[in-house]
Image (cartoon, rainbow, N blue to C red; front, side, top):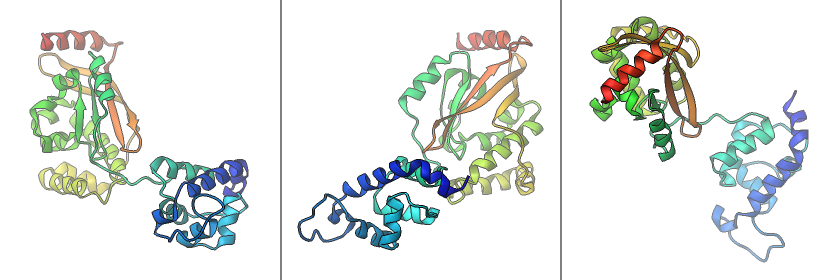
Length: 282
């Protein structure tokens, strides 16, 4: 179905949304003189059109939900003019193009307190939070007993760095090669969302210098598998344990994911891991 036909379903909502956004702005907020008395609050259509770089007739048609096509560049300009926040910008895209916009990736994030509480409730399930750079921002006690996150300095508490540049973490993943290659491909999908972030580019350069495997696999550009499946970890004092794992998005705007591990039940891993964990926590 075309964009134009899709807009037929959202014409009323688009009209009301655009009108409400321009009416909440004063001329001074967008650098215009207040002028004389206005019959309606906010900005006039011709002012929004001029600031967004389009003709008045064209913008009027858009606000009326007429049969016109819109580009991402124009929608971003309009979002800037109307001072839309991230949620409003996404809503505008959905009303006009029926798909969300491309969000610029950011690597720095703060984990909400409720997520810390959620992980604490997962007593026997290792869980941790990563950003686009795969910095481990938060974790629960079970994850710390498995991955020892608390023993790493903040600059090295990064899962992809630990996987390729840290001996104990390499030994933890058994077999290392297959799992590391798959995880690197997942990291690559995150990297393309934040290619302009200096810290993620610096991480890649460092790992290309430290790890021949990383350097070779990064250049091969392979993409493998989904963000869920299994992991096999060799735990000190217990041996190999197979886990189901998945990634859950907990903050779409900040690209935060919670990684959740659950030891498999059908092969006895679950009971063995629970006993091992209780022994460590005792």
